[in-house]
Length: 155
Image 1 (cartoon, rainbow, N blue to C red):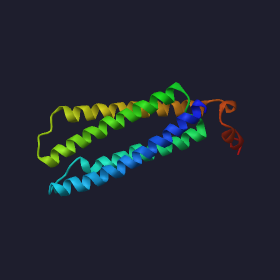
Image 2: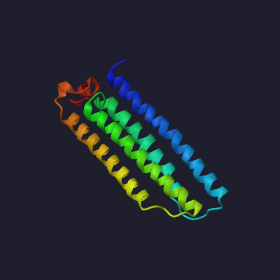
Image 3: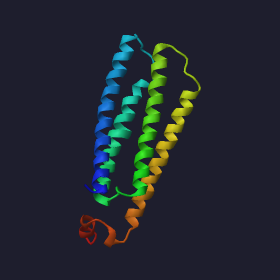
Image 4: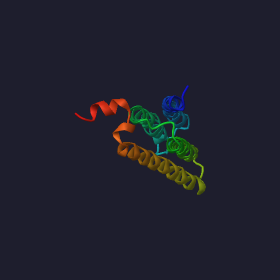
């Protein structure tokens, strides 16, 4: 199996994993707050949304872009993939910790939002790498673009 194919498959698996995590996080939010008779605002309310939007939908879009512009199989794409995933993981984990502590009525340590912020920064760096890579692919000479794009470039 080629490196490109493995990378495309990795995006599919990432999207699928984030779909499962997102739905599970939504269920956890509902049941955890109900079990603790909590009715206020908590970060748990948006954890599942972050997983579904940034994770599942984000990687489905990346998968479509990869299919069209052959993004995977490069160092820049690999850096994007791992930084973006790490950023989501750190951010969502800290959101979950913050949310659980809020529901339990425990104080939230100052480090939690700081680490969440670092996660968001890492996620943003990953997105910047994706846009840099996509921009390079769009500027590439027509002969280096995928055959599907070459056939429609003249129309």
